[in-house]
Image 1 (cartoon, rainbow, N blue to C red):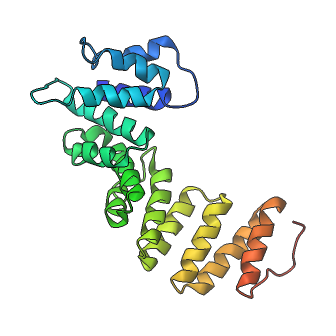
Image 2: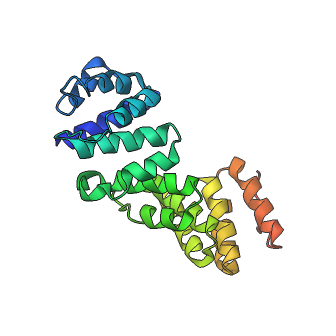
Length: 228
C-alpha cells in the first residue's frame, strides 16, 4: 500500500466516531515528518478538524514548499468539508486529481459535495459523475449525484441517476421513494409504478406503508395487500 493510501485510510478512520489506536496516526509520519506539519498528526488523531484546517491553512503562505504538497492539499480539502467550509474545499480540491490520481474518486466526491452545498449543482454533478463504480465512496457519490441533478432541474438525467443510486442501495426506502418521484417527474409513470409495486411486495411489513401511500397517490394501489 502506498504512503498516499495509508494517509487516506488513516484520515477516514480518524474522522469517524470510532477511537483510533495510537499507532495508526503513526502511518502519517512519512508525510508529517517536520516541525511545521507534525502537530497536524495529533489534530487528526483527535478528530479536531478545525485545528487540522487552520494548521494547514497557516502553511499556505508564499514560498512554502513540501515534498508531499498534494497530500497536504487533500487533507486540507477533507478538513474543509468536515468543517463545512465549502468554498475553501472547492478552492483546495480544484484540479487536485491531476497531482493525486490515486485518490481521484475521493477528490471528485468531496469536491462535488462542496459544490452542491454552494448551489453550484451542474458543477457538482460533473465532479460526482467522475467517481467510478468500483470506488468505496461510489454509493454515497451516486446519491449525491442524483440529488444534484434533481436540484439542477435536469429531470431526465436525474431519473437515470436515481435508478443508479437505487441499484447501489436497493433496500433503502428513502432512495426507493426518491427514485419513484424522479421517474414520475420524467414522465416514466409505468416504470415508476412497476418499481414501487416490486418494492412493496419485496419489502418487510414495516416498509410497505410508505410504498402503499405513494402508489395510492397516483391511483395505483397494490393488489392483494399484505399486512403492513
